[in-house]
Amino acid sequence: MEKIQSEKCVNCGSQDYQFLHRGKDRLHGIDGEFSVDMCTQCGLNTVHPKLSLDEMEKYYPTDYVSFPKAVEDEKSSLKRLDRKIGIKRRCKVINQRVEKTGRILDIGCATGNFLRGMQEFGWDCYGIEPSEYAANYAMKRFNLQVIHGYLTEHLFEDNYFDVVSLWDVFEHLPEPQNDLAIIKSILKPGGMLIITTPNADSWGRKIFKEHWVGWDVPRHYHVFSPITIEDILNRSSFTTKEIISFTGRHGAFLISLQFLLSDKQIPTWHKKLIFAIYRSLFFRVMAYPFFLWAERSNHSSIMTVFAKKEGS
Image 1 (cartoon, rainbow, N blue to C red):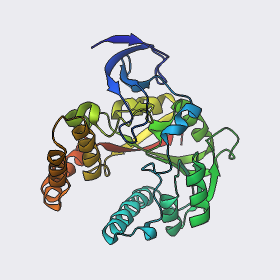
Image 2: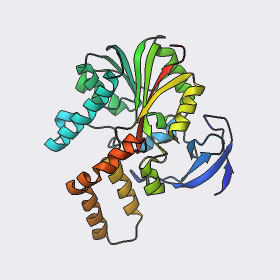
Image 3: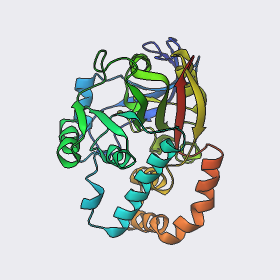
């Protein structure tokens, strides 16, 4: 593979990268040419060129997948049930790992569905969301305390939160170590940091390669493995307590499959038939042991990291 030089790695500072593959916006088809490269020193995967936040705005249209409406507003009863279960699982994962409820900040809270779920568990909920549409939705629909913008210094008092969560957000941060420094200051002693992010060591990546959903070029500035995310957390004085997988099953598989089929030179009806088979309840049931095995071995497409401040 081609060895290239680029800007410094946000984790280790190296400028040496190994080219992995070309990338494009497969989710919305917005124009742009990119490459996915791996740091030869620490193994962190990075997308080049690195867009500014202003340049990145056009890659977040209002129909972006992370801006879902309220669960109650879903027309499909099956989808309502599926989403309720998903939100409850996230809330329970946190409540099972903390001694008592307290104050939580969800960075990149989107339309606020997760925070609404935490409210029902008795948490004092705060959110930050760069999308004006999503932030306004969260405030108006759920009456949440949401700041429209980005995490910056002096936005909150030091030692203010018991938990800070980033669900499918950490990979969207251009300078994650800067955000980690702020998070460390606003977390209480003993406070917990929770990060859910694509797993570069997943079986999904090995199966689908450049079509894997976890790349999400160019919105994902970086894609971590368990080793690289633990490394960057350690460099920022966080101690990783646990890495688990409990999301990213059939849905992640289907999106990756859709990306793969879109590049295949086969008749459209062939693509529809293949997708229908893999989307079926029969396949979902048959594939359940595979997805469960992937989760138990931490090779699912999504991993969740629990970390605490050092010295607490």
